[in-house]
Length: 348
Image (tube, one colour):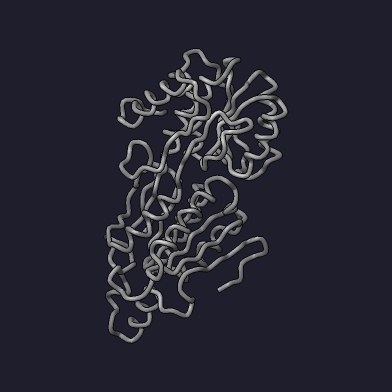
C-alpha cells in the first residue's frame, strides 16, 4: 500500500486496526477454504456480508476539508455521529484534503482496507467508477454524484437533491432583494451544481416574478476564497444585492465581498448565526447520507440504486433556515417549501 502524498490527510478512529474487520476476517477464512463463497459476496447486495463477525470497516473519502463549513464538514458531522452511535460495530477511517490528481489512488487505498467506501462529492465520480469494478467485494456509495448515473453492482448513488433547497434559496434571495437583481455562484461546474443554479433562478421567479438573475458563475473550485470574492464582487458591481452559492471554503470570499458592498448572501449547507450578510441558510445534511449508508450495509438493506434525499424524500436532510422575521417572506417560504415537498413544483 502506498503512503499518501503530501497534503493528503488520513485519519483512523474506532476499533484498533489490529482488530479483525469483516473484510479481513472473510478474506482469512476464504484463504483457509472454509468461507470461499461468503468472501466472494453476492451481486445483489455487494460483497459485504452483514452476518460476518467483527466491525464493519468504513472508509470515507472527503476530498475537501472537514472544517470547510460546507459539504465536507457536513459529511464529517455524520461520520462523527456514526462513531458515537455505533461504537464497536464500525471501524472508521477517513481521508481529507486530496488533490484531484490523487483521487483514484486514494480510493484504491481506501478500498484495500474497507468493507464500505463512501465518496463525498460528484467531482470524484469518474475515478470512483474506475475503482469500484476493481474491488467487487467492497460496497461503494457516492454522495452528490450525477442523478442520472447508472449504479454499478457494488456502487450506489445518494442524491441530496440540492436543487430543491436552491429553489428556496432563490425565492428568499428575490424576496430579500431591494434592487430586483440577484446572482448565484457555484464551485465546480458539475451537473448537480448547474441544476441547482437553474432551480435558484426558478425559485426567484416563483417568489417575485420579474426578478433579474444574472448569469451564474462557476469557479472551477469549491475552496478558493479569492475566486469566490472576485465573482461576488463582480455580481455586486452590476447591481446584484443578494447572492446564493454552493461553495465550501469559498464562502469566506463571498462574505468579504458582501460586507464590502453592504449586500447579502445565502449561507449553507451548515446553518450559522443570522448575523452579518446572511439573509438565510440552506441546510443540506450530508451526514444523514453517511449514516444511512453505514446502517444500510449493517442491516443488509443496501441496494445498488439511485437513492434520493431532500424535501421530496422520506429520508430528509434538507430545510431552509430564514434569517429575519418578515412575515411576508416567512409565509412565501412556507408555501414554496410545501409546493416542492409535495412534488407540485419541479425545481428545474
